[in-house]
Image (tube, rainbow, N blue to C red; front, side):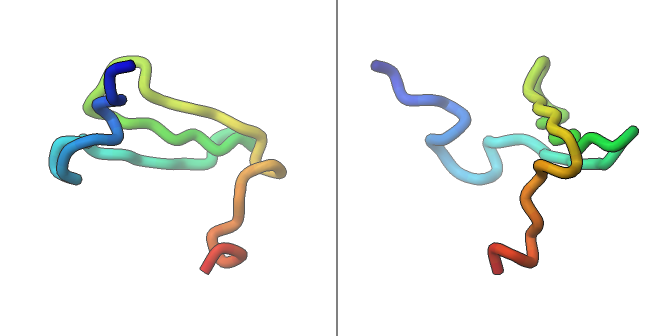
Length: 52
């Protein structure tokens, strides 16, 4: 199986990732790639403070 190019390589090759909350949903997207995004209900989104 070929390695996932989004995981291998240096951080500069990954593009730019942005997140926002819109209409009660968390949206995360790699704006440098087509169709590289995810959405989930805000209630199900992880809270950063709980992971620090």
